[in-house]
Length: 129
Image (tube, rainbow, N blue to C red):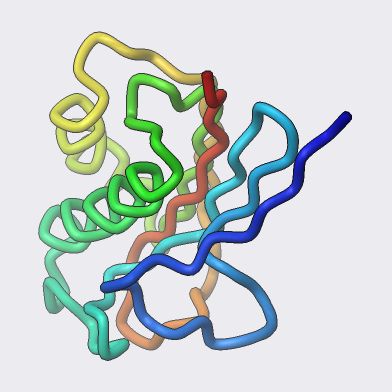
């Protein structure tokens, strides 16, 4: 029998529309797109894509942890960037958080994100054990 559970994680900003931080469906955890905002929804990192990326991955990590997972459990990650040329800088942050784990990945350059000033958004899918 399949299991579905919604997660709202303390310390994460209130969603800006009708969604939740993550949804578990069976053994899969789908983490909604995380942007560089604090618990009050304020932009973190200014115009520095590396500082923003560190905060985004910290938010993703907090959502994973709430479901009993870690970056080692991530099987797919999607990164949205305002400027694809930021990929190299963001990749260094990815290496910090994923370590030896290499998830499947998609990188997309977009013209705009929902949070003004955000240069990066990341969503992830994890396999729960």
